[in-house]
Length: 143
Image (cartoon, rainbow, N blue to C red; front, side, top):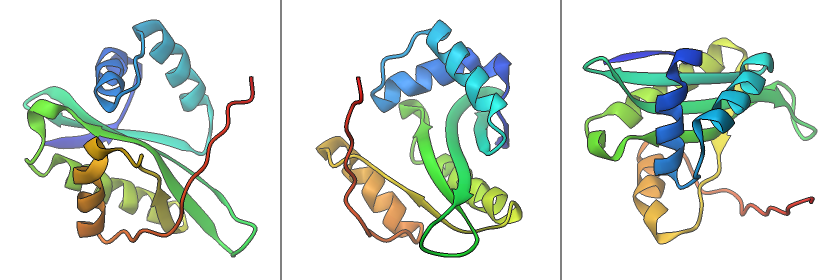
């Protein structure tokens, strides 16, 4: 397995992975989104290749906080292809993102995960990876 930075050649695979994450996405939408992500200097996307096929991705960004010093990282997308789960791919992706964020100067990393039943396995995975439940998230559409 290889973990590497994503590139524009991964658009089709990223589109498929977003669909599996529960976010219907067209290839053209992903092309536009990924272009914006690549242009953002504080956004990073890693992919996992297994037998030459992209089977997982993690996207995160870094920033500063009002309530503490230093830099934080936040995972904003994370998925492993359903046909490749339970092979250690998610563990490797998350560990690599943590190392990457630490090398960028981050002293912590966080993520949000939906409170839906289908996310329960993910929640258990995060706990096994050393993450603790800390907050409740809220969202509001602005249009």
